Length: 241
Image (cartoon, rainbow, N blue to C red; front, side, top):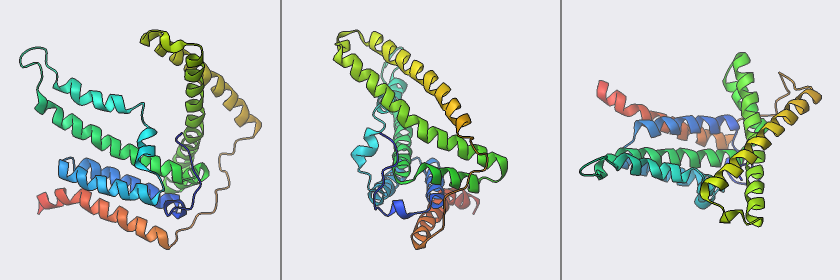
């Protein structure tokens, strides 16, 4: 389940702000270098970041097993034609590269979530984005990070209950309807309970942030982010020169 996992990895010792900078720099580099060579370089970067985050590749991919079929379906659908030659393999190249780029970004997000407490993410976003917009965005990030694992657990419970009751013998569309309906009911129920809990706990618009400070480990992270940014803008600079 995609949530914070306390360990003693290098990424756990980094400030949340430096990790967000690395995320943003990596995204910029991923959209600037969409060719196979660029994606191969980004793959090496992702594997290295997963290693220092104590997040195995299979765990990172397993977090998005529900998304993988949709990423795989995009290139296949793009290659299909309603007439001769029916299948055009070259048309699937760009969608396949885009799907792989999305997978790399998702893997990096999994590493960030598993190495960063929710309170630190809230505080980092609030400090990076000034004013009320930052506080509102930080609050939203905190609610999403806390709410998604609960919804994941609810969906797993619904599927497990359906399996125990021989639900796997039903048609696929019937199983999808049961899981979707049950999940929606759980979402609405938990949303109401969340609103009551926030009022009961007197949700603060300006909560006391956790202590945050850059260390010598963050120097390396900022250097990596700077290198990624330079690599991202290099094609534009080269074109101007």
